[in-house]
Length: 303
Image (cartoon, rainbow, N blue to C red; front, top):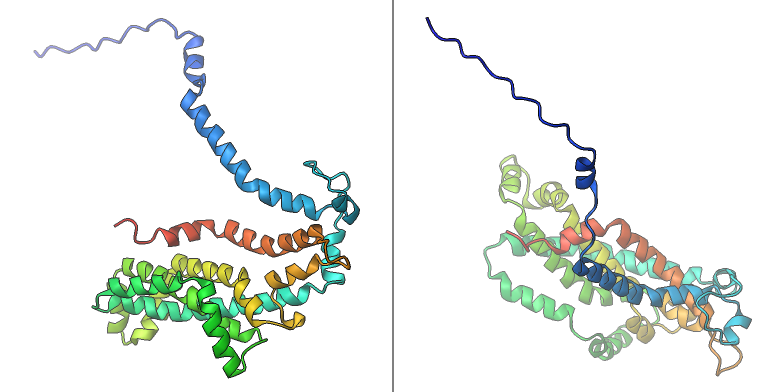
């Protein structure tokens, strides 16, 4: 007869004291390293954001308060008159429209041709390293070094004092950056995807637009945002090639907003109001698309 095993129940231990769970729930005190880290973060944020805060503060000052030279952190009287005057008296909507036309057209052309060039560099069996090095060198070529030759060329072609030749000018440095970004992104996409489309009868160009580009949306979005920001913020080329105020882009028109009858006085509160108007669309665009920008810029960093 087999012996039946009797399972002994464990004796209940002493009841857990109420201080036990509470002890685990107590938060640890931050160490000096953590306190120093967050203090450094706060200092960096304050140093980074204070110039923009001062621009917003100055834009909300009245002309009388700005002329008195007040240097307090908060203006005594908040007013939005500088913003309304920018549109009603200075017709700032026209420069904004010119900047939007130039920036959007530059972005569209950069994305389309950058996608084609980046896809070719990613798929063709050619040494892409020297080509990419040349592309990046062209993108970071000094802007002022290009102004003189381009001015002579545009004067010969009759392109001066028009916003549309600016699109060609901005492509000099937006197209190389878009090509470099998209090449790195396309290189991460398995070639099997478009090869399956090619087997089904699609052309190489059709496979690119319908199979590869939808997968590479973060890279395309990053290239578009960077191209738009570079074209939107340009000042040197617009100053060199435009002469008629009605054709000015926004960064160039901002300079004239602060002029008064007194040649020795510049109303920076009006200029700062226009700076805020120009900056807000870019800031909102970066805030809403920051994840896509980071993923696009880090494409190819990890394999």
